[in-house]
Image (cartoon, rainbow, N blue to C red; front, side):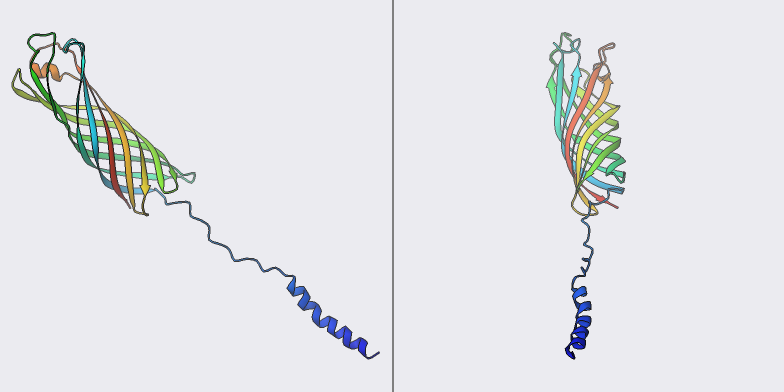
Length: 230
């Protein structure tokens, strides 16, 4: 009979310990993975690459029409501002200013005897743009499309008159690009653009012959660059 109180006492002492063993301790919260940097803010940078200039001259001036091309290196600076939304969409505005090295020379083949056999040089000098851009932040990359205003200075010479000519042409530009963030403040860039500068009467002004058809000028370029975000 004396064993019963001792057994009861032992059961009461061990019950809390057994219950404690069944309690699950919640795990410490784990850090959540980051979704990438924010592209919001100002930035500036430099870029360089290669460009292709094309001048479409009507067949009333050149035999069967002609597209004279001038290609060469290009380099410039860019500056802009972006805003990134919670859904990773990015909108922004960017301005650029650069220089082209794309002079070319050729001999004219024309139905007009006064032009036939003459030599011409042409190319563009500086180029400036103001563009809007719309993109999507995908990890460390920003993929985007651009479009806006473009201006360039066309220059050249014509052997018939022996004089140089130049003209500032305005038009539109559009492009596709990707910026890749190496860190929070440094990114690389790859961009392809196409610009249409409309028509110019440079043939009339270069030759001194009134009433000649205008020339259409376009330019394509592929550039790579590096930028710094603030």
